[in-house]
Image (cartoon, rainbow, N blue to C red; front, top):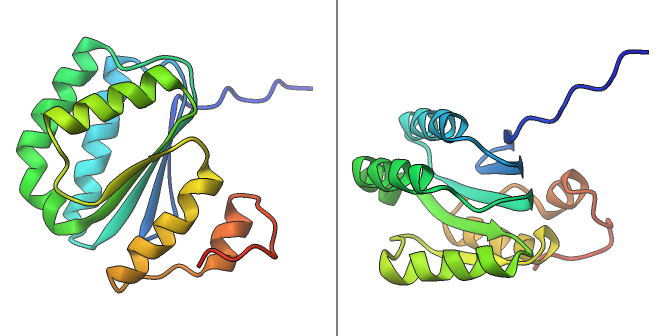
Length: 157
């Protein structure tokens, strides 16, 4: 029996477009993070409004100085396109240090689109649905619940 493949440190899921889910697992290297930023630019190239869910609930480390530098450069380069095409960003982490870091970063350099930090994906979903609807976009609550393995009887607003 062959071993299961190791999960990728960063997985991008566009199956619920216009919701783009980015999942972080374990430790992400600077080169893997650079690949993520290149992929994000390709999504902006689509010129379609979308919302991003950064799921860091399985990440085992905070970003390195190199990753923060890459992020800052990328944000400066892509700022106008982010403002035009990204209708919101949800961050999910139950790590108190990471939540604090995200809050500090948001205070120092605020994002120009609606954003929020949640401890669990289930708590982020009502906000995501509301942001998508407010932007004239929709996925459908039942498909969101099923996609994230949540109970079918729960309403997302």
